[in-house]
Structures are given as structure tokens and as C-alpha cells.
Length: 377
Image (cartoon, rainbow, N blue to C red; front, side, top):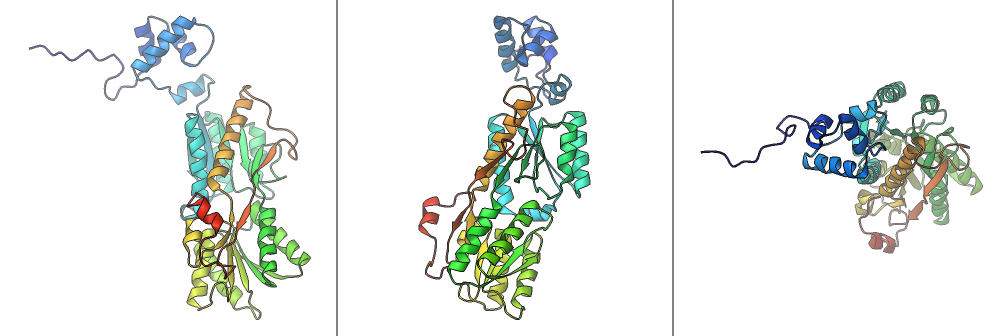
């Protein structure tokens, strides 16, 4: 009895990758002609190109990123290196939502996101150099910008297409997208002053990050302008540091009547300390977070927070990164240049969502919260 199963095309057996040579044999052309066709390059007729592409689809051929790199074609990958502890990244809702927005846009453009966690800035720079030398990525997204950031000079020297998430004014000749942390800080401090608070504490995240320093500077400046007593405790990002800092500020001779935290996770940890000390929120101490999330909105009472969509921030960064890659390949307009003008863009305007953790008249979600629903923060 003979089998009626159709003959399986060469190169499509289990465990065997379809190659350009397989397509060339089926099409009756050279491997060079297939390479020109699948990479969209001139040198083959339209009819031949269409026949080659149709066969490639039939065989379910996928391009080899290594081969594309050797040929000088885009490898369709964006890299991001993180010199932060994994447990901190895993607990930070804002960063997770940012990556989700980034990945959404990159995936729609058929790009992959390659992420790596390292222990130091030096290891991060070494990774960029290795990726560049091996043509592993088409561009990199740099996060956690610092005041005097050695990564900027390293990427400029390499000539690696890169986008800095953060700023303004500290990203050299590299393009940048950023959220205005100074404006977010002013919104918070002015809101607390309008409610009658005169002693305000800020529990700050990692001091070396540029956005933390910008918040610190604006916090002190606006406090002086409004003649407030402002104190600041560096806690690093994370619940444990925020809890310790909250306990410390409560032991001050004149404790603050409001505490501002750098993230939603930190705000929840601080609120737990207040609850354990039987300090009511907001009657005893008002609580504000720089980052909004379902956690802040679902807390009792809901926590006043800066609303800025991390998902939208990630989308904006991804779109800008693709522009940078296209420009480097000669497919778009130049995006580098004067770091104070066209190279940077403020992409998200911060807004303050006032809730019951600062305003006791609000027993639950505000109208804006209800309208927004549980959107990604």
C-alpha cells in the first residue's frame, strides 16, 4: 500500500531550517538572486522577485538574523541593558508598563526587544560594545540617565544608534525623549501647600539617577519659594528603603504633615508604616506618589499621584527609536544634532490625580479616575 502523503519540500523537515539555498533550488535561480529579492534590493526583475517571495512563504522561510548582520541588513532587534537589581525591576509597575508599550510598537514593526540585566554601568557599556561589534542590535534604548553619564560618551564614540529615555540637556548628541519631572514636582508641592501643609518630606529614590536629582532640586526650590519646611531622605527604589525612611521622618522633632514618595511601591510601603503607627491618612500625614498604578488607585484611601501613562511613554520611545534606526540607515531625517533643540522631545505631560490620601473630602476615586478606568499608568 502506497502512502498518499505529499512529498515534503526539502528544508522543511523537523529540526531543519529552511535556507536561501532551498528557495533558490525551488525557484531555479541563484542564492544571490534570492538574497536580493528577500532583502528588497535591486538586481532581480519584479516577476522573479514575486516568484521567490511566494516560494519563501510556501516554505515558511524565516530570515537568519546572523546572516542579515553579515550582509549589513537590519537585524530587526533593539537592545536595552539594565544595571538594576532584578527584584527592584520586578516590583516596579511603572517600568513594566513602560516595557509593555515599548514592546507593543516594536513588535508591530517586526522588531524584537533584547533585554539584559547587569551588575554595573561598566558591564552595561561592555555589553553595548559587544553588541555593536557583533551587530546584534540595530539600536539601543538607554534608561536610568545619570548626571555625568559615561554611557553617553561610549555610545557616541561607537556610533551606535541610540535613544536616551530621560533629560533634558544631559544626553549629549544622542536623541532623547523625556517626561518633565520638574513640572511634576511643582504640581505636587503646590498642591500640598494649597491644602495648608508647611512641613513636607520627600522619600527619594536612587540618588544617582538624573530624574531623582531633578526632583530633588525642584522640591527644594519650590519649597523655598513657598516658604515651606522641606526635608528629604534618600531611600533608593524599593519598599524596604521607603519603609525605613518613613519611620525616620516620623521620628523628627517636628514630623512632616505630608510625605512624597518616588514610586507607587514606595508609597504603599510608607502608607503601611503610617498604618502600623496608627497615623491616619490624610488627617495625620498626607501621602503622594510620583508614579500612578492600579495599586495606588486601589489603596485605602486612594493615593494622590502623578498620572503619566508609562505604556504611552514606552510607545513614544519605541516610535522615536525606530526613527533613529531609519535615520542611521539613510531611510529618514537626521535626529541627532544640537542636544538642546531637535534632539530631545518632551513626550508626556504630567498631571496630578488628586485623591483621598491628600484630600479628605474625596472618599474614593475621582471623576478623572472613573473616566480613565484602570488604564496602564
